[in-house]
Image 1 (cartoon, rainbow, N blue to C red):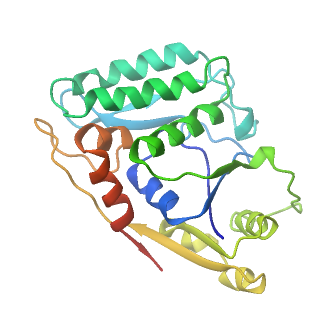
Image 2 (cartoon, rainbow, N blue to C red; image 1 turned 180 degrees about the vertical axis):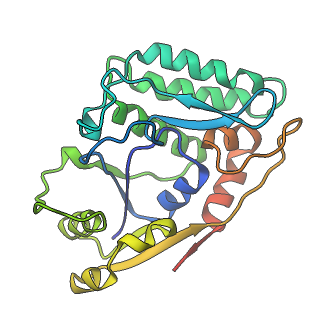
Image 3 (cartoon, rainbow, N blue to C red; image 1 turned 135 degrees about the vertical axis):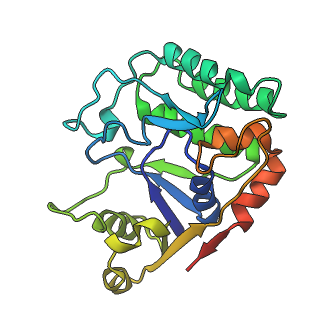
Length: 238
């Protein structure tokens, strides 16, 4: 079983979904210290004039003193309205505007009655994957009864999770290669691999294309089957 483990990001960029497509199972890593002003609570979309702008999820308890699974959304409906407002300039320009808004609306509908950031971000992954017809088998780390020794280094969490879940391969973004010790993984019989998404540029008239924006931008300008091909084909595993 090939495993991927990532923090729960807010409508992450397209390369995040290349990793999902390349693994058999996904673990939402939500048990360590929360990082304010990270991709967990914000992302980027096109600005109505030029460049990009942030879209945010305001929290009622944003602090490094909490665990990620303890992060709570200040106002779910206000967050939904603000996000839709910052996407409104795509209307009349992006050919898949309405379909993308449907992804957003369904994401928030999944979370009615809840205020946990992890639930919102996982719902976003579920709805994007459903829209793209991309299988997404996932588990949330805080809901698993896993044992961890004290004093783990950054690269050790994935090793202990992979071992306890019976993974034969662990796949991580290539940008994080330096924190992992392949000798430790080999000693546990787990193949350590890294994925590097290749650039995927697309037309965004009348705007200039901006790289590495939220997947919501990619959904606005591309048909689902085009994005699925890009996710699966434009990635290198080593």
